[in-house]
Amino acid sequence: MKGNKKITLLIPTKNEEGNLQKVLDTIPDYIDEIIVVDGYSKDKTVDIAKKNKCKIYLDKGQKGSAVRLGVKKATGDYVIMMDADCSNRSIEFELLIAGLEAGYDFCFGSRFIQGGGSDDMPWYRILGNKFFILLVNTIWGTRYSDLCYGYRSFKRKAFLKLGLNSEDFSIETEMSIKVAKGGFEVIEIPSFEKARHAGVGNLRTIKDGYRISKRILIEACK
Image (cartoon, rainbow, N blue to C red; front, side):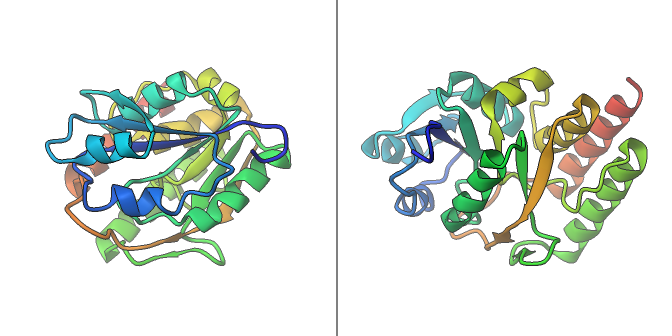
């Protein structure tokens, strides 16, 4: 435990047998609960989670659905969400927790502020992310530097107040927008994204870029 707060780590997975054990081996002892929400993997992902005594829930949806289910099942005061592909570094947990301890409701990792970076973003994804950031910052008067990055922490009660409904990779965008709409306190911390260790990711640039665009439009019209 950090302070007197219980901390849940949430990891959505799908066919991550080549990565999950490496991720779990780096998790510090102060994490009170690890929840794996699996999208019916066809490999040994669930077996690895069981071996490591994670709480496991199965979900037929995509990432957004997995995140929403995981937070619903979490018992922690604070929730850290991270990817299962070894791209997120657990040494950054301290910063993600410190932001919440300082009084912020949400703490978002950013690859585009001093101290952040990425080994896993081709130029076209960087341009797409920058475009979405510009749109969101212009429409809602925010000052985000990163928008489509899933390495985040938040107070569970604050997350539940957002009423998120994204089923897919637009979950981070919806979260960022509704945090701004709801007047929640948010801070960005520098984060370095490593390249995926093994396997193939589930993100599809064009399809998921369209979904993110659609989410921004939906929220702008409300």
